[in-house]
Length: 174
Image 1 (cartoon, rainbow, N blue to C red):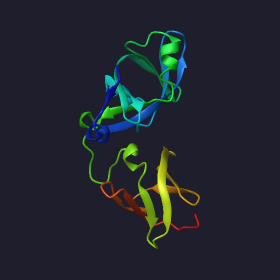
Image 2: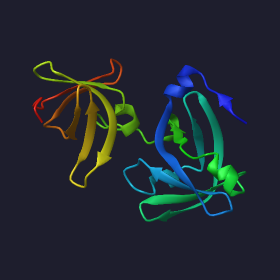
Image 3: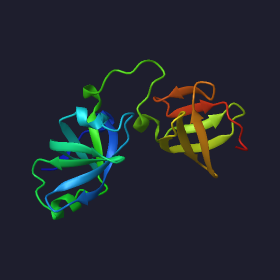
């Protein structure tokens, strides 16, 4: 049963990954998590799947780590067709179920969409992606062109989620 959530409920959802494909013939799905630890999403027994304002709650029946993805069997998803119908849906968890973050810590989904400018006032566009390199996370800002910005204290000076902005100390030519 799909549920239309209020704007507040939508803002309380934290995107934690996405379903990339069905797996096998018995309703399993392959999930690409956007969590610090590959299996971090498995800490939550219920997930909300969807896009935009259409979300449906699913219970995780069983799951396992497989290479750089998760293989997951959701309750009520019993065949490949049902699993295929979930392809490309986002996986979210209500913010209230997540650990409280320290100052200057953010969930990646909180950074997506922030408008980025540097100290000289150059508009870098909006953050469209965040990925991990091993040394540090990297922000992908897309405006007049795509820029890769390291997400480290020396570069990211201010994050204002309420205003939807981020200020960075980063050369516009990089």
